[in-house]
Length: 376
Image (cartoon, rainbow, N blue to C red; front, side):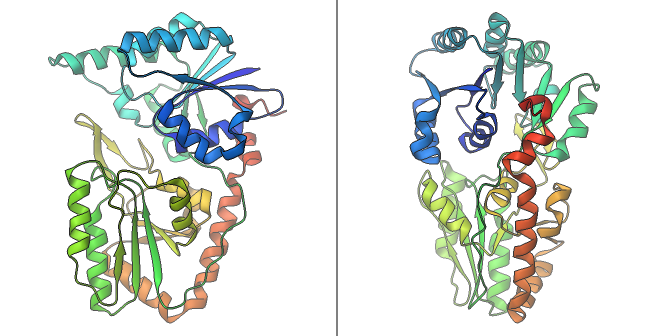
């Protein structure tokens, strides 16, 4: 079988998809652009040459790009085309899919409401996107969601007529980096500095509360920034006057993969100060854990770290036992202070995180998605 995988944005989410489809009977072709290819090369290292790559030129206009995508996909005579991220130009993607006439097309839905509940608009740009989404939906009968907490909502939204897969945004590949708590607790908040995804006010409130209790807490904001909001977070962190607590930030557009992995492996807990209700796509509401998923869940899986999340955030049941749920910042700082008083208790959290991540190995994810990966 020949499978094509398309991704030009969420390289870290397509990385496990490629691993899962990488089977002896499957020929893989990955369609991407030059910048994303470089990120894939960082992840796959010497194995990057094991796959066929179609590096698409994005320097021309939209019509030129999509004709290029069509011709590249047509050339390979794909049996299955897996589009891992479509965030714009839906009408063009619908055209490509219709023209290719491939037997199976699977689209990962990152924001369910954005795709299925778009509204007619007087604004030309929004109207074109709305028409494009409707056209795309008509072309596809198989979808993927990255979190099992999204399955029921998507099934209800589509009327139960479509096949829905659950390929997570990470798989667990290796043994856990074991840690002990010594003179401080290290929390890592992965991801770009984005106010629509994470509430950084909670991070600063936690630092202040830790400082007031003389708790030695280290928080790392493990992500770059590309707008004024991210820059403001960097400046706020730099302005904090701390003696017992401390914060590390990255004043850069991008955190390199090796550094990203290194910091997560050194995290006692991954901290997920997630917003719950957001609107990524115009004013269409989304709910984290229901209509979209936090990418931090996949950092938890990949690195086998225990994590901390708001009580209101819906998370996979398979990860619940390695998550501390906080109802307030005071609740959270008291948990961390108690952990410093009883440092050996951390071992149980780490062991449970490892057990949970082991449910996301390549073999187990394939078994749970047998119709997609043709597991016999």
